[in-house]
Image 1: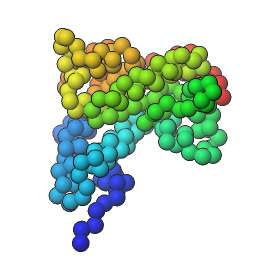
Image 2: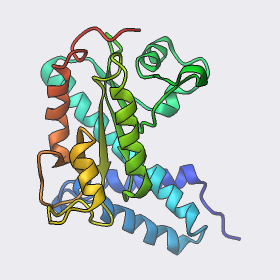
Image 3: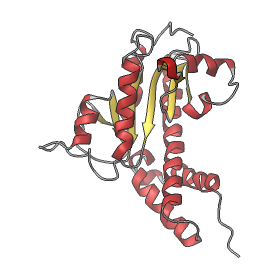
Amino acid sequence: MVTHATPDTRENALLRLFLEWPAEDGKPEEHIEEILQQFERQQATRGGDEGQSMKAVGGHGLQKLVRVLVEDAVNALNREHGLSLRCTSDAELKRRNPPANLDRVKRNLLIDYGPYGMHLPDADVVVYHAETFAVICIVSCKTSLRDRLKQTAYWKLKLQQNPFTNHVRVCLMTPDKDSELSENRHPHRKNYAIVSTDLDATYLLRPSFEATAMIKPFTDFASDVSDWMSGPLGGGGGGG
């Protein structure tokens, strides 16, 4: 009898592939799509659910990989510049009775829908200042763009509409599975136009592509966060 791995176990298997990526093959963050493909082949040999189930596992696994990447970049900034940045996620902020620090962060990120209540934007990773609880940026990640990109652009628009949240940067990280963003060609595709105008930055997790001021390699993320820290609420303040 074959025992199938639970989604959490499979996500951890994907994270292991990422962490054990051979250094001679390049930086793992530039080979996310290859790691995902290797993971899918590995799981296929073991049996288990296909289709939507595997797609969901891949999506949740990517979130874990991006969390590792972002936390590493943030920790490096803290060491190099004496900063106090931390990472969390919308799932952690939505928990009932969160710790006091995360409750403060949550209050600094809520969007007011008037009579329909206060709601958090979707955010796979939230980078915030541990002393002021000011939110520096939120990160959304997806293996391919599709509707998720429009959702990310929507949250940027909503955050901009309120003076308490309009400093929050919104960025996307993706291996760009469908290669919609890797070439700056004319006429531009709709998604290319959206990331070039409606988000603060998009980081492609792939080895080579035609970078622009808005579509960048992940290695630019740390310097961008450092720049965003110098914004109106980055270094101090932040309400809550």
